[in-house]
Length: 219
Image (cartoon, rainbow, N blue to C red; front, side, top):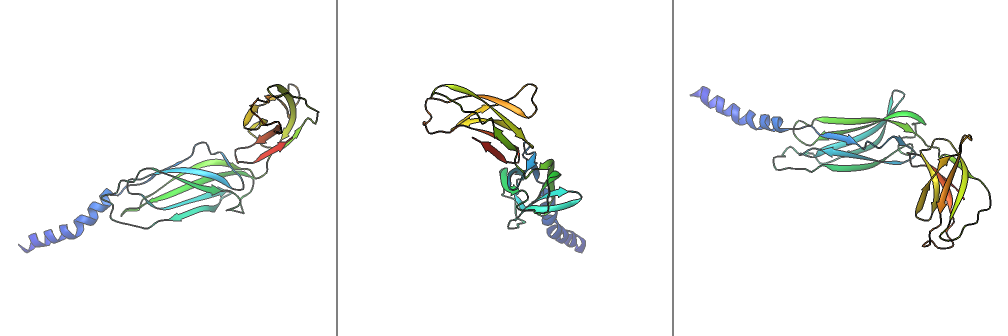
């Protein structure tokens, strides 16, 4: 009889914690796959999936064998998660040299880690190779006098240097892509319109930007 009572007591004492442990889960961390570069302060989005929620989220930039923290958030810890059904959440934070001054331009790795808000407190992480780019590209327009009628079109040439992934012309809210000038390295041209709905005071300009959010313009 004593053995039965002892066994029942062990079940009562050990059963609930063991059940909580078995029901614990590990989070799923997914960095935005489009993130390829960060600059001074670049928005980074990460999706975290865990039905029990997470108690801690942190992010680092790893470069040349050293880690530099760019984000850290702790949340109230709880062990009672039976009735939780947390939906996937998107967490957005800024990463770059503003939050990690020791990071230099060049290759690096962005790492995000989350810890589940349950008894086991399992952790998971996701990471991407990135470029750190703090300097914007440089751009210079052709300097020619252009004449354009409202509702008409014009062509502009310009030169762009540095690291860039997009370059073209903008007239108000309208953007026009550019193309390489054959036989002239670094030279590009853009055929752009000046739509009827633009105010006559709108000044067209050329631009170049990179994925770190840096942009250069020239009128």
